[in-house]
Image (cartoon, rainbow, N blue to C red):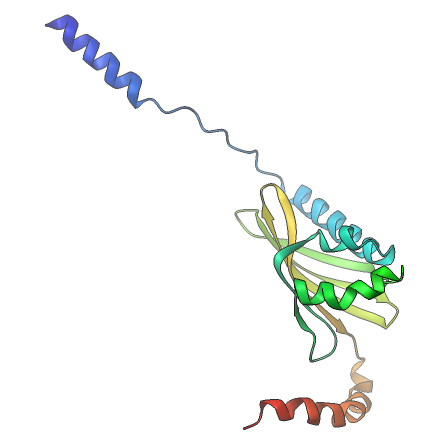
Length: 173
């Protein structure tokens, strides 16, 4: 009886053992920020080099790109369609980050950032969200805005008044 009890205990103990899960090492926040900065710099460089795959390959399949015009709220597919002719001509756009702030969530799989950019439009600001999926960071959301000095806002408001009126008419009943 004792042998059967001992055999039962050993069998149950053996069957209840779970294999150790392999846990991926947690990257330091500093390393995450370095990786994200590199990805974003490479993303902007891919546009400058008209490297279509290098650019759009860094965006998630469900990403959104919001441009400087009020009508520019694009899915990745829409933004690809809009951008392809520029990339095909070998001349997309050139943005260079002057400064960037990157913020990391506690789980270290999600970041958000803002960046000050030197562009063909002058000084712009970009902001966005990246998510880490299967050990790779992807841009989920990006917003590009043209910076307007406060002293020039009234001139800009006057310059865009007609277009704003036409655009906003779509939202009125």
